[in-house]
Length: 397
Image (cartoon, rainbow, N blue to C red; front, side):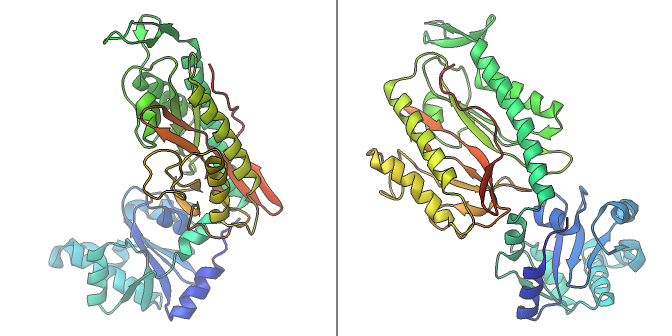
């Protein structure tokens, strides 16, 4: 099923533009989305209401014709790129070729992503191609509304993610508590003769993901005070009786779609505060998921989580914008070709629509206590929502 680009067509018509231009390799998600092509080197895509066209190297020409969603594929050699590069240099030659290619397509003025490279934009303007920055998040908003095929890609990546979380949980569960056996005399977890570390658990997660065709990306295994910083990856020995946040957000190597999930575990006896925080966070998760439906706003879903925490007397950024403890981030974000994309479940979150895939990840943090976060991945449907996450939620191991 092809994406619906009608809103992009309307934007181009309203702005008096002929097309939308991207100059990037396929690690740029907008490039990947518009072109449907995966290539490690930069290439140029122009979308117009009539067609999508690609300009690629000779190396990629055959594959682009077979694999991309483009209606038209041209190569640099069609415009004498090598001769021009020998005479003018590669940057100037590229601008001449792209300008000539756009002229052949009848494209004179284009919108470009806000982060379109400055050099190519300026050189195209010098050749009388109008290049203007995108004034609205049109393409990213289109990308936010996933097709059924895209939702299945995310679901498949989440299944691999759950296998990785199972591997992490199994390693933590089989560990033994060694009181006073750490390098500094503290309590540690051991597996066999080795102290169990964040790095060892992360290795198990990443190997599991690789075996399932996914690329790991900055996996978090953070214990104790490290877990009080939502983006601390964690390092060193893992301790018993302390919260261990495991946050995994892999990308499928085949489809390029991400998944995202977080669980918090304690091997041993959690403190009364951590148990209370875990129960509140689970309650906030359930309440937020229940609030997901077409027409609800990301702001309203975020407010539901803040209500749970504030009713329990805990600070949030809504109640205290300067707080450094409590609930100190937004409730969630979109997931797709990027691990963070639209829509947002946050104070500025807009209206939710069917096809939006979002994380729901409430959490509480304090360096003196540690951190707790639980995260599921959910898709908004025509009549409500579907949780794409099957992983159990359990604190004690």
